[in-house]
Length: 194
Image (cartoon, rainbow, N blue to C red; front, side, top):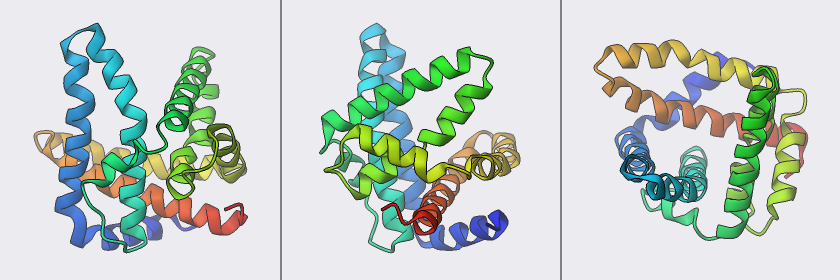
């Protein structure tokens, strides 16, 4: 896949939604970040909110690439299959942390392999978390290196965003998420799993 073309395409798709996307991503960061700064209970609350809100972001960016009127309220849609989302988030977090403890590389591989789980749940909320995780792993099979390269292509943009008083990062995040959603769509078409 031509990743530069995918990044250009995601930027073009995002143009009419960029301001709303910056606001949606900023709201996500605030909801996750503020409780964690308070105390130990705040960290637990942030952890419990992170999975459903991550799913909400996936729904939001899938709406953008499918031209289905994204809304900041898409964040709340991540709370509908709550138990499945919490179990998936817990499993993914534990596996990635364990993988990172074993010389980092296994954690990166696990993170890439499980990264499509919430996109799968977004499109099929009735799926069990185990099936979504398995499908994510199958979907990324043979594509983990390419997916890693896609993520790495955004690093210089994030550095540039940091140079603009951190504000630039909030502009890059929606572009990055849109690109990952497009890549998920590409993988789905390639594998015909979903």
